Length: 242
Image (cartoon, rainbow, N blue to C red):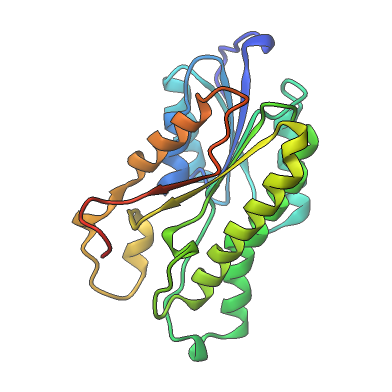
């Protein structure tokens, strides 16, 4: 953690799940401005430490909070630790995720359930505990995918989870609207991250978005007035679908 602590009244507390790599990491760096306190959550201790150092070098304050986003007790403790800084959480970014590509009738039950837990249940848990520390003007950003609205063969578990994430986000948006808490679902097209290296297939990564592109859009959401809500943000590549 950085030794330079901004005054509590100036701090904006932001929790980023999936902060160790990809869109989550890029988002943490895009939000790293003076006066921002970033709680960085992911499973990889080593990767989180590197992100924490980069964020602090940008003038923000950060703390690495290693956490399995599918573990309810761990998520609750992580959120409690982050909220203790100022007594509230101003922004939550859910960017933890994974994918498995295989025909649906070859998926094991364990793979199916793991996909749902990582891509959907983790968001439910983070939102459930974060909103207990949010006030009017708070912002939740759930990183989904164009797969929330499109279907891709071989991606049944991922597509189901992302469709579910879109529906979940829409439902809690209406529940939280009277409290002045905003919920935005970001639907990026294929984004060039380490995820693709572990997936079978020949992917044209040159025609993908960069993680920094998505992060820039999320940072712009954070700068919107507290009364303004962007319900969905679809981000594509000019080249179109892969």
